[in-house]
Amino acid sequence: MPDPVWWVVLAIGAGTFFWRGSFLVFGRGLHMPDLVRRGLNYVPPAVFAALVLPGLVQFQAEGGIDAPRLAAGLLAAAVAWRTQGTIATLVAGMVTLWALRGLLGG
Image (cartoon, rainbow, N blue to C red; front, side, top):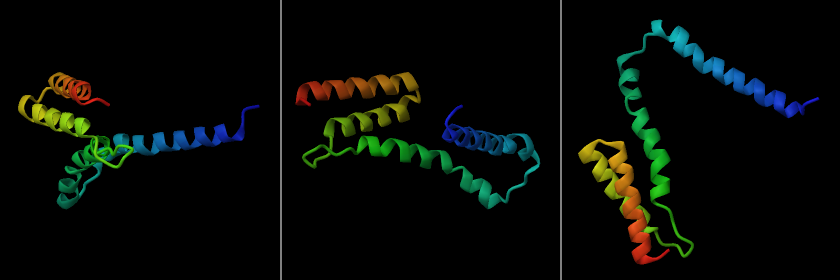
């Protein structure tokens, strides 16, 4: 017999799936005020910033900021803004990070 914890995990997962899926199925007729609809436009950039920025501004063991990581992230952001291409952004950021790590050590 499986551990009861797994039944709880499965129940929570199914509940989450059906709760979120219900908005896809029944949300077509849902009318939101314009203020809410405009506010929802800011959710994707806010989530993206919350996921990316802690990785860029990462502190080293001695307390300083990881400068190669931050510089590579800023260059990648500039490439993304200029080219709007995912591959170019990834290549520019990773090559810069590896080059700076090779030059500066670490």
